[in-house]
Image (cartoon, rainbow, N blue to C red):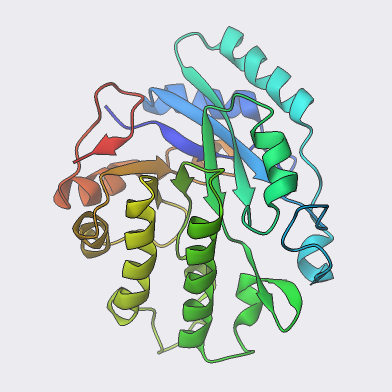
Length: 273
């Protein structure tokens, strides 16, 4: 059996198209044999509030003008409707909390006010020269290798400064935007930085996501996670369209199993050592 897809976006996330659909995502999950699906809609903020570390820092309009607040009430009602409509599928609620260490008070007010089944932590934007900018916008502003180093340092701060999330999503997010050409991205070139993040995540007792929208993690990288003390992984398609739910999960399972992780205690659990 394939694992649960613990990272899916629908019409309730600000960055999806008119084709996004929670109901059709459930249909896709059933069609390919997933035991469960978690709708982890974006929880992002355009400005810092009282108690947020980012308060007073300017934001880059190229990124932040797109963000819309999550309608938590409407979203949870849609989740409940899908639970009733698809009794053969476990439908989990959740959020992907972006930059939760910088928006601790704002994000915490929502996360701690709800009984979400899955809370992911992620970094999409980073402080740079006094502004909060999209991580991919750093390419061209500094050497490519330095972009990844700057990003990994911010992910490390997320892990150390936020206790809101259980699963770390797409730990190497800017890799998706690595400049094309002969200068290819090579995981081994960043092994030290990966291990910084993985060691801190393992010490916190949290879970590493195998994100199948990003360039898929290698067996070696998942072995670094294991070597640094990591004991559990979560699978996430990061789907923004129904047809991408569970995408490349068979390949991801092969990678994870080759690194020594196996299915959990039940079909809905994380995969563990």
